[in-house]
Image (tube, rainbow, N blue to C red; front, side, top):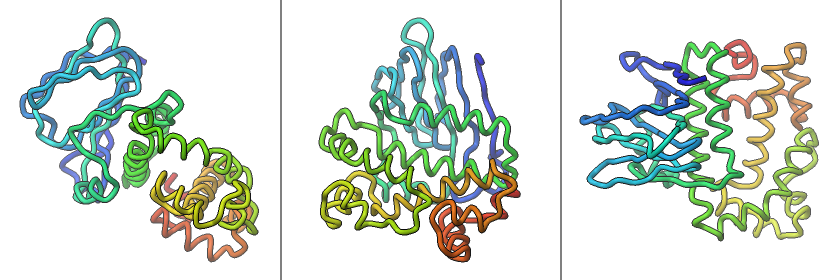
Length: 274
């Protein structure tokens, strides 16, 4: 795979509030000069090697586990520093992005760095592979991906510069693993999470808010919905009622309402589209 690019949403189409235009992987990144910038937001990250990125009068090195988020129409140029430079890129837009960046604390025209164990690199290439084999006629999956990817950058980028956040994440990792194992149990909640880590519920909530900007229960609910998506996609013989029980819901109506609120579609419609 030397150069893999997938066009997702043509610019002339009426876009969703967040939409992905293109996504790609370049095994040997060529020199690029854009005197007028790119018309929408542009994310570029290094997978292997190093590149030189120039914009707004400055030149920086984009090495492994680093990326840059560029605003529309920012003139820039980039090329390999030496040898082979492997990159991943994503171009995306949407009318709510400026407010979203402000709400979640992401800055554009900024270099981001992350640690080796961060899921950012894996998540990037995993999405590229999924889009090769998926019909996404309404842009729902790619729109969801962009939103999740931006949250992932916000959560993981810069951890090696922020030991306080890194320590909190390390403390919460055993609980997160335990959550993933116990998604089918309808009898666990914040009290059980706090007991698992020998913390007070109030202290646990503070840790999750400071690390992920959501409550521990909301985090657990997202894990359940993610697993429900996997069942809907891979287990065609399972009914929605079966899946609701598998992910810890006593009531199928509660599951359907929660799934629709988080994903934007009821489970059966999500299954048909995917």
